Length: 581
Picture 1 (cartoon, helix red, strand yellow):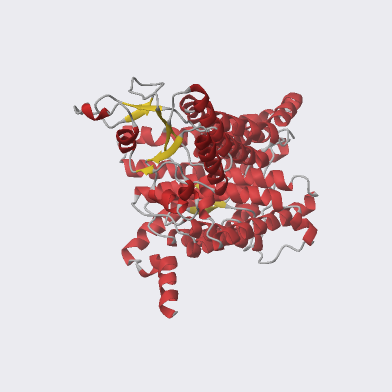
Picture 2 (cartoon, helix red, strand yellow):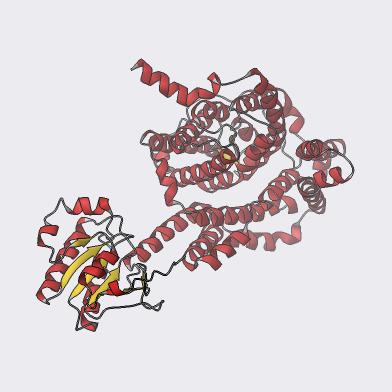
């Protein structure tokens, strides 16, 4: 038992045993860079979630510690993100204002419980049910919705709304009361953040600065821009001229307490928490896998569930709100040289110091500047090209992606991912219900058999071969019966039917029953049923039943063996083999 425990601990915290002193400087530098990016983001994303700015700081401390000891990624930075913040805002929007802070913490707890339960049951495979087109379209829709939601802060109006239509309608109706000073500050901040993100490093390199220093400068630039606007706002006292500011930010470490709400309150959070848990897991794991692939490392999906679950529990117990892995900060952490989860622990220390000593300096920070930071960050998440490429490649996947994108805009972020997942699974089932089942023939002089409607192939009037391009299960079993009946009706001279099964990975009980029915019907019509190219796993399972005892024909190892045995005239006189590539 002790050996098993040691192995588990080694797997979970192996990075501690393998840590070298030379790694510390890399982790420290990466942590400094990430903290510079995280401080303004934590404030901005709390604003997006409809929560006080200190809540964003709280959500950037304990979750990092929890994930460092339970997660599987060496580079993933866990904390507030734009998409989860918007989903949190939608979930707590109907709560009384005085309940929203504790409601957000309770929501994070429920998300954490869902993820931990999934991790304990090793449900990491569930990520496979959320397709990449759905994730890409969801993120694009959510990013666009976030950008629209932040325009009210740039314009200096109330705005508001849960859907894109409601937000745009409110923006247009209140546009006449927009604050000119706020608009100027917001537009200038957007331009500054955009240039810092997209062209600043390039211009520095062109000016002769080394690429590493140029990248470092571009990552520090946002905090400098925020500092400039903060000083201007404080020195010129712009809040007296109508500019909305953050206001007093309580200092001190986050409170450690359980959200004191009634059980019925938690019950009302189950649906939004489940959706947030799905999005957080898929988004975080995708980011972690991409970063790990660059370093030839691997990610354990089950450990990611545990790490994210613990991070959300920590957020809920420390006055924060739901968190997940940040794509932008994780990429910065990896690019800055972060080698291990210790960089995340150092970031947590720096954020705790920020909560203790720096919050009084944030009072005069304009909300329009934080909104500008969110807008520019979300611009990089817009990926309309991916939706178009998906549509061009596959109409079914494209329809799923488009429906997901529109659902986010029309119904809100809570429903977008559910619509995408349900629609993707429904269309997949629809495709497998009517699998491709063509009659096949042989390329002359070869052992290759292809679709008789698409290629010029040899066919036989008495022996027909039906290739099944899908596993057989309850949803498509009757489709096979109908297809066989159609072949029997259209080929009066047929004496043998071969079911070619190279793509059949499974035959469930309903499909087995259909095969028994087909066998009996063909036998009564004087037609013998055979199989070819059947996988060994499927054949072994058939031996557990008595179907093979009643099969009128036999199982051939290959389609060519079946045709050589059954067909008349014999194809063996065509000995010249054509090399088909």
